[in-house]
Image (tube, rainbow, N blue to C red; front, top):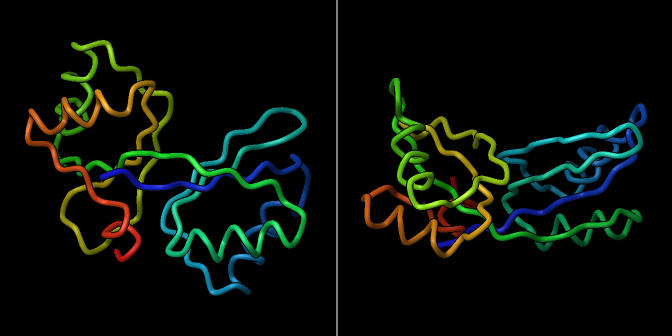
Amino acid sequence: MMAEQISIFIENKEGRLAEVTAILRDAQVNIRALSLADTTDFGVLRLIVNDNDKATAALKKEGFTVGKTQVLAVEVTDEPGGLNKVLDPLCEQDVNVEYMYAFANPQCKNAIMIFRFDDIDKAKEILAQKDIKVIDGKELSGL
């Protein structure tokens, strides 16, 4: 039920993001979702891609530090309050969202959001109880 995200630590300087995306392009890896958080000196680029192993190998070969993290891909209804249908039950049971970002999916009428929770197992349980769709990592890679 979980999806795997890769995280790349990059220097916060001109051209580094383009370098990462060029490496992925040359390795024929498709980026499906991304988030970039930065500080003065470095950034953390979080990605959902169609082939984690190929992406990781290509980036490491070029000297980048790459980590893997378990996240949940959650279908969110595309309507006012849709995100709150996901967040409210989690908040009520003290599950914290560490970060989130959107997933590009032109095939779906609803939004897909990628979430990192402080307690991913509890979050999965709550979402299942509320009949909120969590998208499997393999299905996500194929979208």
